[in-house]
Length: 172
Image (cartoon, rainbow, N blue to C red; front, side):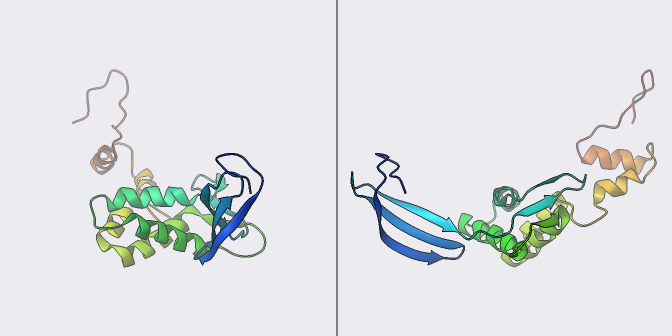
């Protein structure tokens, strides 16, 4: 391990502790005496997320943290609790062996389940913001005829203005 300050190749381990998702080591550079911390995580099979449109991307725990931060807003939830929630969700899908493909709605369901234990209000916010399961709100809207008042109102609530044909009167 190289020293981040002087780039010396020789460092020694001062302290080593097991943490929930790996090992935390406190190191000291033998050249300049600078102390720093490294973290080692266990390496499991890569997790791949299958999006609703069929696209596949690698799992990113920081996306869960960002989404949960957003829905917890002004709720009394600490950053450590959010990080622990994201770790638990990731751990629930980890396996040893080949790569694992997980539908995005399954991840949303797991986040909501963990969030329900942490803060029920935030869990309801999450469910409203991130439609989980097959047949979320927007998919149900696609089944409605284009000009029905219910569809126009729902699209307006989603922040999408209903489309008009050129030369037609504005929609009420």
